[in-house]
Length: 114
Image 1 (cartoon, one colour):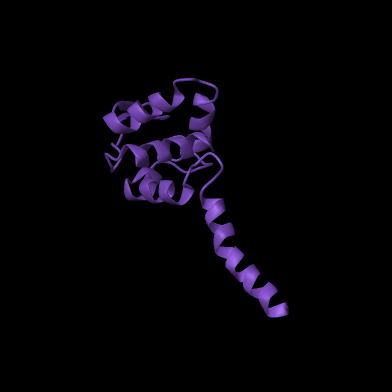
Image 2 (cartoon, rainbow, N blue to C red):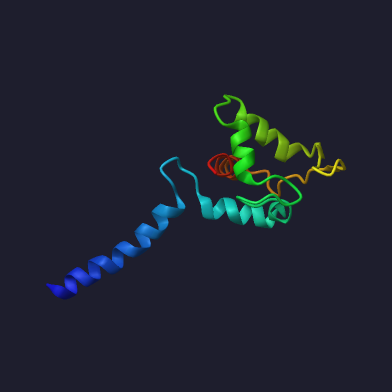
């Protein structure tokens, strides 16, 4: 009986870890972070601290409650527009390193969920 309980707990651990990576909204945070890293997003952004670009929490606040937030952010990361930095300089925003619509949607929704 005791061994059965231990085995049940050990089998539940990977499930719990997976469920924290994939939220109720269907966002795969692990995949989003991998894409962000692979696309060099994390060179300029972090979740909660401004770097060269704004923190993802600030980006999420900007689009919060806006019906077109996902669409605007998707366009932003897939078209490479000019961006104005806090010091007044401009640069071309890097285009995300994938054309897979599902990966892009997952990343955008992860950023918006911060």
